[in-house]
Image (tube, rainbow, N blue to C red; front, side, top):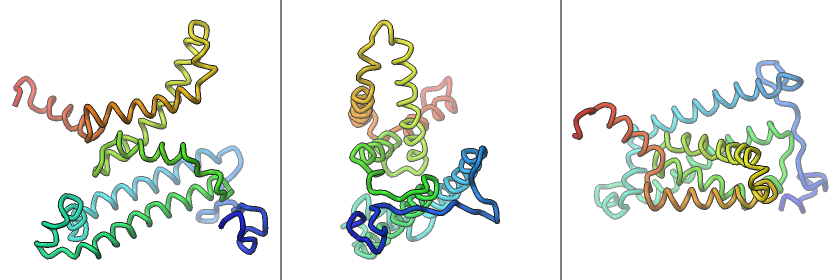
Length: 210
């Protein structure tokens, strides 16, 4: 649809975005990355704060009830259909915000940006961070953004000893993502958030086991 709708893209197959402007300041020049880092940090912090507080409301509690057991939630008076639609709407709002920021950051909206590898990356972030956890989504995103950089640095260090690492780095990266997902699903399905909780509990109760 994006490629064929000439009235939307003027036949180019993509959309050009104007320079992002905030409070009269146009983003660009040598401080472009610094400016966007500040904007994205504020937006991410507000999104996390909103999501954490959402689960303290009646709507958030109904989300958790339907997630855990929709039949039991319906028996307690929760409108399951309305709750699922609201969950879809809220999640779409967060995704829409991320998409708008991505469009302005890249200055272009194109279907080529969203590949299968991109979908796998987002799925891996949720699984590694911890399903059903707001903090886990942050941990998973940070972990999987840093993982390719660590692998790239490792391939550079071992370039002389194992040249295949550099030659087949894209395959190594995808394989590492798959391996990480499988390991977390087997050994810690609740992800990095649960590991962090265990570490805090260990420090809190040390030297006692319980």
